[in-house]
Image (tube, rainbow, N blue to C red; front, side, top):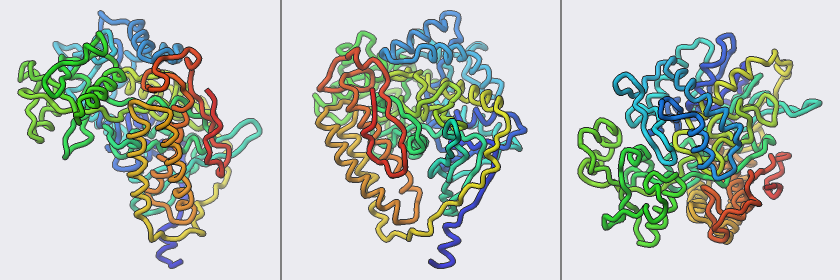
Length: 547
């Protein structure tokens, strides 16, 4: 190996009190909630602004109206969760909703108001207007505001273009303890060994596994995969939420058309201009996302069409431009005037309802390892996430996580000297095309075989195809230097198998999981699908799971 190669892949050691991996609303909120006496390292895979939070359009659900109540919000969430929500968790998170909105306002977030009060909007599955929003770019403004606060904190160091390789853990007399992680810097190609008293995974979901998604490229399930490899149990990965309305356009394949359009009266139409949602649900366009996504999918297949239409042009032109400025401008750039014509839309993968088994404060089965936000499974969402409950969960979990961390006394594991990342036995690959080829192949397999509607036959076929790719990826990973694409490929292989195994285990249809072979719900499966964490580094088979 040349001296240049040695320098290229050198390792650096960093010590910190708290390591936060992920820069969405969950990661930023916990960083702001921790005391300034703690040193915090906030790591983000790309630029700090490149995350799912920034792309969120709708808003954050919380009871802020006299016409609404916590009991109604709880009922809507549990009903939408199709019988497998953790009711105690639902109650706890929703009761903290109003205070979460106040906390955001105290941190400089200015929600859209009308006559001095929050201008609450309505979304599918909600019985009342309870969505606090900022125009049609809530996530963007939330993220910008919290990022500004984080950057002003002297105890917080932000490390961009850096991603998790694996967690570092040790065995104690009573349990397994996380003491940090190996991180890969995409710019310098350095592997950084980070030793931390507390490690928080706020890495978001895994929607990028699918060919069509509303999520940014960062959504590759990195935290979920790393936690599973470390030994954490994974819950309910079969419940992948497909957003009903993603813009269908050849030059922009990931632009979300907010559910708020339907909340404000937009109608879904076939290619010949006829409404169809009344044939699927009495709530029509305001039915929950799983119902609407399946309805659109069925209409497309029955009519052999590549999309359906979403029409809000019947509303006042100025209202549309004021209420949905970003959507109006983006569509206009593409030649679609939504004040005059309907928008072509298709369903696309949007949210991961399952994840790492965790408490509301993010605590996992591994001591000092926390998972918060979309990467976690608390039981809040059940079999289908209620619209705009995700940002609420992020804020509540982040603030609870900070309270738990502050209760811990100084940790003796800081005295342990961690090993540097060892890549002395690997070489540079001359076949890097294999990574991109497998990346694309997995996304097509997941879309075609493990999508909105599933069959046993297709799930088994997907499992066989992914298993072949897994062998190739594991061999490649063991022989060559790592890269960002390779690390993500390794993660999506793990996540794909977790989703497929979970889907095969659930012999029914419930919420977001619809099986043609088992089209009705079965009380036998009115519970979580639980997959055990990996026991050792040689275990790639995910056969050990229980329901």
